[in-house]
Image (cartoon, rainbow, N blue to C red; front, side, top):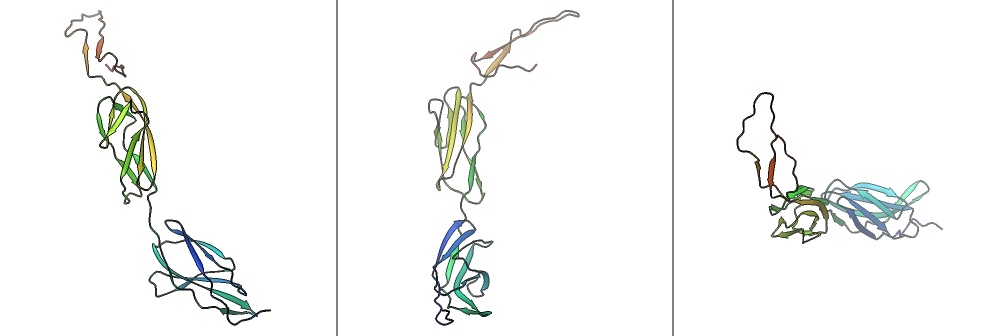
Length: 212
């Protein structure tokens, strides 16, 4: 039995999936063929967004705020019959932080204080960051500064207020603070040679290669 009178309007549930994507779900309206979604960006002028027979519809939008209303319809004998519209459903997309990356070199000299910072994606969303290290015997973070305590590898992690996290492996090395030749002055005659070598301080410096 088909009736074209008294078609009930649907109820709608909206779920925000991402910064610009939403999922709409309607209840099953008895006698309805499907549902029509209308949208507006100003709350006044509405356009048909989608006509569908499904109770579920997902849409990616280009603006940050929309107004949505839905009605059920019956298609019978080549004619459309409509219910009244649902109340207006405002939708506001809130952009969220997608990622962060730590600004620190992969090799850091022992004892040097490195002020930590991050790059944000997208760059205009800024949040407070908490920094940690995987091994506090190798390095520590004090007031946002990375300080190497002994030679070794350590993982530096950063976590935003909203829970976005990243990490980077850092090698703390012992830097060369001084070097000197075995001779301050020498004379080399034609067809003769002399061997020079360099003393590095401290003796346990990590990198000992010398470029002459």
